[in-house]
Length: 364
Image (cartoon, rainbow, N blue to C red; front, top):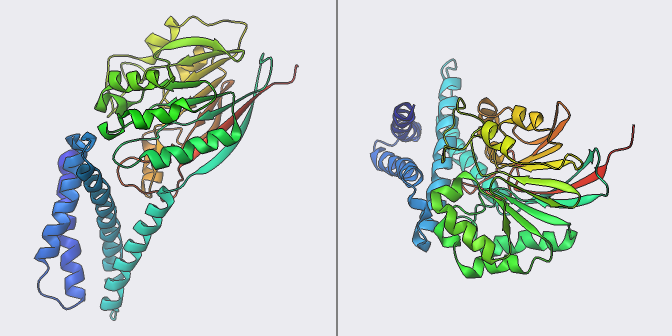
């Protein structure tokens, strides 16, 4: 598969400059072709080698810049190909105008996507829970992705929302960190000012950085890690799982350990008199959560696809992409994520802070 993707990217690096240069009446297109190839291949290299976790500010700028160039190149390729196909049945076609138009549209799409990624939306959800003794409000924050794309300023803005809503507790549900630049005391000191209990589960990106280091920083800041364990709090079985695949048959491009939900979840003893809130980074293993009689399952990881056309393609990988689902008595709530990974861009999705209100279900 990777070779198919590389071949497609190399083809695009030739095709786009050639078509646009031809439409504009230019003969030299290879400098643009070389730059485009360097941008897309360089970005993939930064991602695949894990170079982006380097704490250097230069790496951060490179990561963000190459990500936006990659997105621009992808949209430009799609638009150029579409324009080419539309031109085939027509005798007259405004080639120059279309060429400049495709460049302008690709630029506007990336610009808008970047601006969307700088802010967030707050969504509020109320879930009725059987056997819950009193209402509980929490804020669900998976996928903050503090690192090369997200810094102290963004975290400060997010935590200001926590201060505004004053929930009973906060959950950082995996991918809190995706770069060593975030593993600094001044970053995690911000969590010390949060005046409510805070819990943290691991995501795949903590493993790509240094999972033990991230957990250590979180603990020092007063954030409680839940690594496949239960705490009894707020009249709930509060269960946080380490990042893991659903079972040994599940295929995943993000396997980071030898843990599986079907094996680990039954090991956690639950208080049968309390409802269960399950917190796991990825919305997988729903059948095992149902078997464990979980009432509410909080997840993230998908980013909702983050940018179009990923918003459509993500559905091929995850049946539960974003929002609320009812499954055999279990309520699954999948966040779009509070931050971004890869291109610092959102198109068709938003950075999301979820305010979740659990209320006692009416007696039958």
